[in-house]
Amino acid sequence: MRIRIFRFFFRIITWFIADVQFSGLENVPDNSASFVIAANHIGRFDTALVFLALDRTDFILPVAEKYQHNPFTWLIGYMMGAIWLDRYTTDFKSLRGMLARLNKGGVLVIAPEGTRSKTGALNEGKPGVAYLAAKTGLPIVPVALTGTEDRVVIDNLKHLKRSHFRGVAGRTFSLSPLSGRKRGGLLQEYTDDIMCHIAALLPEEKRGVYAEDPRVKSLLGK
Image 1 (cartoon, rainbow, N blue to C red):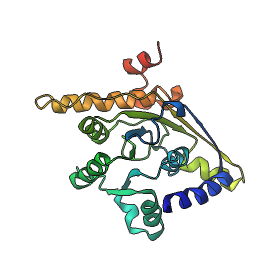
Image 2: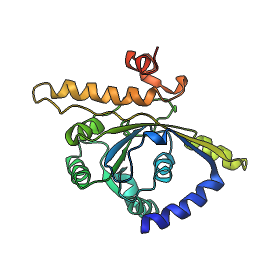
Image 3: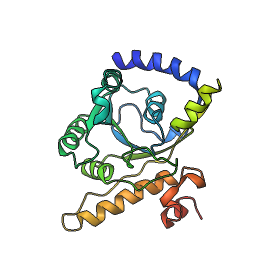
């Protein structure tokens, strides 16, 4: 109930800030399914955009631990189902918590980059998402977000302009179980594969370090 109430008020607030459009929602599994959403990370409204797009109450959201110590951001995290994550270490406690909740059902919304891109283009992905997806066998929905950069939103607010938030969901795909011997190399391959699926949904100038990856060109049909 608290999530539905929070979503209602948050939708009103977001409407004043931005024009929001989603596409590709037909690729998202139905509301009874458990899956992983892997998205790029360019601003503080990224997760909120996914939160508004899906009528779910069972979100699992990894959030940087620094926001846990601010009462306002802690409350938002609590309302949205946050798991506090130490970004600077391999946070096995948080990973176990995410796995436990995924095994009970739910939607994990996570940014493989681990932190916001300062340029708005993709940075290298980190292996946490690939590990969780391969471990659970759940389908992955790649999502590309544009227009949510903090500096763009703030500048538009200063000029009393609404921003243009866009979200695109791609086709789902899955990862094979991790092999014990080749686990490290396979995990990196899986991570790059996830990032390439996101890159293929982004404008060319936003693909960052994955712009020339052959997998991106293959996904684009080039």
